[in-house]
Length: 273
Image (cartoon, rainbow, N blue to C red; front, side, top):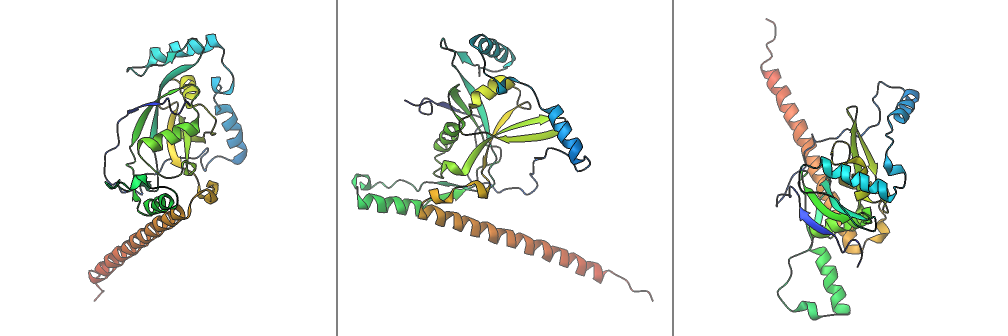
């Protein structure tokens, strides 16, 4: 049994069901320096601010024991870490969803006995299911707690999160990010597929400002589109078209409102006699 299959997942501050529109005003500061600092100063400052922690080194068994003890002493809930005799450990991580695009859910299961079919008919039914997916926005405040082990990798966490929400999108579309706050700046770092999120949580401690985990989409250029099926690509194109139309409507509405205000101002404008 793989680590991913051993995941024991519990609801966090759970996502509300239904649809959610994205707010244009919700933008996060994702920069490493301000416009006032020069590039030379920025590089030097970044090196000085770079934290030195256990994430860059291997920990011995005694060091892990000490870290687990210190971590549990700071926890104000029952989300403790448990150390095993072999030096591995289990614990909880909290992942916040910050998805800008809608996700796809499978169509409702048919009550007919179609599941017994196989071969060519089964492949045809799978294509039909992909075409009839339901797309919707996950609320921006969606949070999930996962109970994982120290050997669980970032890619397994992503797959588990999507499975829990029955999201059928390819996991390659998403990445897990490490988010931290230092000196009124927000830093985001994309986790490699083979990194261990629980190890990062242990090293940083339970403080969410020091480190939190965020699930986001990959940049368009980072997605391997050849890995998707034809119905999936068609579904992406439909979503992009819908977003483009919504964006155009917002722009037209904004300019129409500005035009009406200017016309109203012209009507109230009194010419000198």
